[in-house]
Image (cartoon, rainbow, N blue to C red; front, top):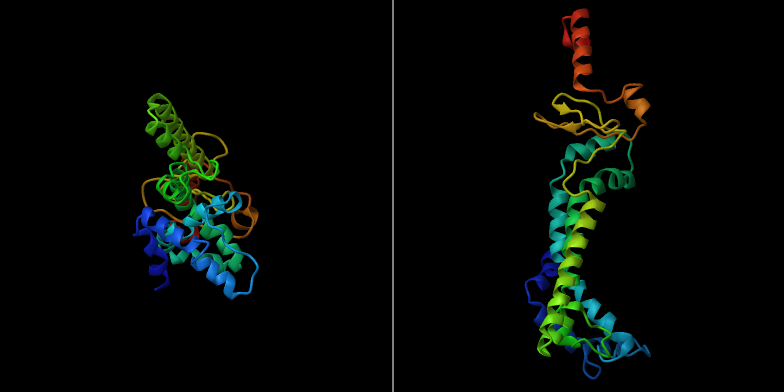
Length: 258
């Protein structure tokens, strides 16, 4: 029920939400002033009409529109196999260690995508600002999208197109930066929890861990040191593993003894 209530504002258009916020922020009959008066506080909400409150009032409209981020993150959390958490608990990991070393790394792609969506929506934010403040007072809440609209309305089409190009450039920079920062799409590996398993391939560059290749993907996690888990063994190419397998097979015919 709480999830549904939190997601409902995303179904409503930003224009309708802006009108609701204008009613809440109204200095005469707004709900916010009624709450402040009922709490015996000397503070009074002046809405989006003053320099000090205009920008926070517009920024607060994003509080109830984060339902998309909630849905994406919750779907990614639900897709994490329970075996990973069981293995971490068996290794003696605490709740914080499970969150820090298991959940957050596996949520990297989802968090990166949500960051891109929020940044792009912030860069191109127009309708809420246009309805609530119109960019005022004194351009304190003016955004690039609204500025381009104002210049286009004033018949400065070339200037408006230039601002549009800047918007596109900022969006591309934000996407590239977030993709590199979160390494969206890359394989999550840990030097302490990676070994050359069957079906893995070696990256040509030296010092990089093995990446899962064709065949079953084995998820390994451990909160012990590399020496405790693998001893002195390190991630070696497949041909070295095949040589070790051949030597083991010559010593014994039973795979269990290897």
